[in-house]
Image 1 (tube, rainbow, N blue to C red):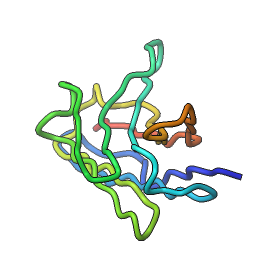
Image 2: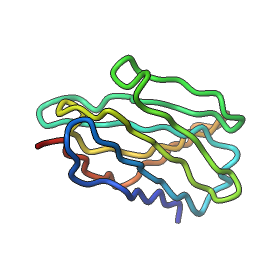
Image 3: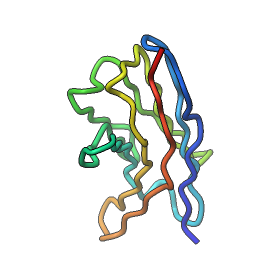
Length: 117
């Protein structure tokens, strides 16, 4: 019954922006660090960014300075703001929940982001 549901993906031109959302249910949201991963065709799934329950963030070099992760614990939702998008950002983006202590991890279904003119 734990669910992570992503939204906000789509087609955008190079240099444009998208805001992804991930709504969590069936779990105590504040116990989990949240993250975004992405997987491009023919490539391994890679970590993009993470955020702890208290709001501490990490970013992979690929998105540093362009991407911003945030969370709203009252809404059980995590966001990914993506600016200055490049064609190489094209991928399926996945929401991830990782318990701060226990061996519990959940994944969303993924949302397609395509950056093309």
